Length: 175
Image (cartoon, rainbow, N blue to C red; front, side):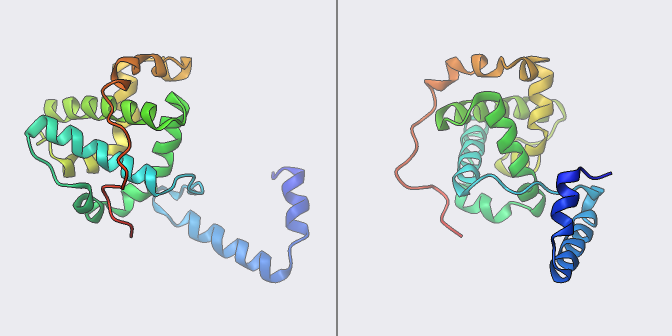
């Protein structure tokens, strides 16, 4: 049963608005997994930050990496669906400050790279990009219970000093 507030709002819709609501809900239910996507709460800078962190980790692991401007072209539709949830996860874990988010992402991506290495997968920027949706699981395995206890922000205090400041211009061109 729907909450009374929602029923009240639905009853005030015009027939055209109701038809649009029904069409949109059908479209959401047809997505893989039947999940209704949550409206994005990120901007391009979140995408740039994640791609920049992926590049840094891949470069540290292999000595070379694809630049974010090429990574953005390789980003799949799945990546774009995962990004809003990942942004919310990171912000809930360490807050909204860019340096904290970057430090956390770098730490989590290094954990992901370790996990991929155990699976005998190559540590490249493309591989990291494809597996970025696994970050919460990898962090939870490395730090069990820390997320729910709100302790992850304390884990990254050492890494914050290593995070480079935001470049004056994004390393990924605007779309």
